[in-house]
Amino acid sequence: MVAQGESDLSIYTKGEQRQTHMRTENIVPAASRPDEEGPAPPPARPLITAKDIYEVPRLTVQGALAWTLPESAWWPLSRLFGRVNAATHPKRTGNETTQIISVLAGTPTTRNAHRVAVENWANRYEERFQYLRAWRPGGWEPKIDIVGAEHVASALDQGRGIIFWAGNFSFNDLIAKIAWRRLGLAVSHFSRPIHGFSATRFGIRYLNAVRRGIEDRYLGERLMVEERETQIAMQRMRESLMANGAVSITVGNKGRHTAPANFLGGRIALATGALAMGRSTGSAVLPVSTLRLVPGRFEVAIGGAIEVLDGGDGKPDYAAAVQNYVNWVTPFVLRDPGQWRGWRYTSRK
Image 1 (cartoon, one colour):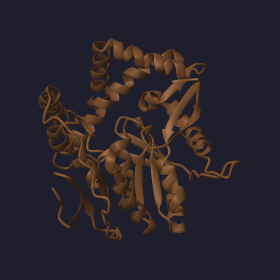
Image 2 (cartoon, rainbow, N blue to C red; image 1 turned 90 degrees about the horizontal axis):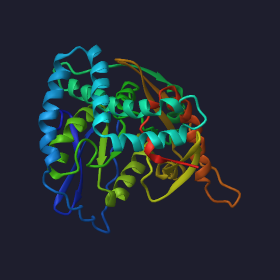
Image 3 (cartoon, rainbow, N blue to C red; image 1 turned 45 degrees about the vertical axis):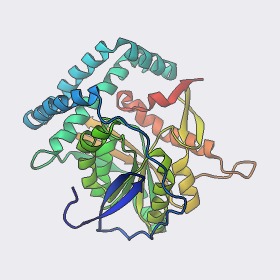
Image 4 (cartoon, rainbow, N blue to C red; image 1 turned 180 degrees about the vertical axis):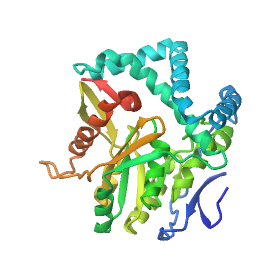
C-alpha cells in the first residue's frame, strides 16, 4: 500500500513486477534509466511451502502476544523461545557453537559460545515482537541513542552522498532505519525479495510484507531486486548519491567480489560492493552498528568514513578497507556477541 503523498518507482522483470515506495520529501528525482540489455528472468520459486503454512498461525500468535503483553515481557519470553529453539535443533546449535568457539579462541567470551548461539535465536523472536507491535494502532517508537551523527553532517557537507554500511546486528534491520529517519534522512535501501520470512511467491508477497511494511515507513525508497538485477539497483543508488542522497547496504559476504580480514581469533570475508560504490562516486561509506542497551532502548553508532586507498600495486586495496571496518566493528561485537549475526561469515585461521 502506498501512503498518501508518495510516488511509485517500479523495477520490472519478465512476467513479474517489483515495486518500491518512495516518499517525495527530501528526495531529488532520479534520472530516467534506460534498460538497454533487457531485464533478467526471475528465478523459479514455489508458490507456497509447508513452512509458509506453519508461519501464518505462528505470526498470528506472536502478533497477539506483541499487541497484548507489555514490552517488558518481550525480553524474558524471547529468551525462553530461544532456548527451546536451540534445544530442539541440537545439531544446528552445536555447529554454530563450534564456529563461534573457533573465532572467539583466546578471548574471555569463549566459554560463553553456546549462550551466544542461543541469544542469536532469542533475539530473532524479540525482533518479531518489535515488528508486530509496530502494526498495532499507535505503532512502536523505541528509545534510540544515536552516536556519531557528526559523521553524517560532515559527509552531507561534502555534497557527495552517504552509504550507510549497516552491520549484521540482531536489531539493525528496523532500529537503524528509524534512527536514519530521526536524523531527517530519506534513505534508499537495497534489499532482496526474500528479506523476511520466506522465499516463496506467497511468502514474499504476504509474509515478508510484515517486515517490509514497517521498515518502509522510515525509508525514502526500497530498491528490491533479484540477484541478477543488482546492476539496476546499483545504478539507481548512484543516481541518489550524485544528488547527495543517502543509501544503505547491509554488510554481507555475497557479492561479485569479496575481501578477507582478520577477526578476533579467526578470519572473515565480506563483499566489497559498498566500498567500490563509495570509491567510484566519492561518497562517504559510514559503518553502522546497532545494539540493544536494555529492553526498549537501543544505540545506533555511526563511524567515520572508511576509505579505499590504492595499494602498493596502484590498485584499490579493498582488503585493507575491509580490515579497517572489522577493526571498527569488533568492539561493538564484543560488547554483546549474542547480538551479532555475522558469525556465519567467519572461519578459523
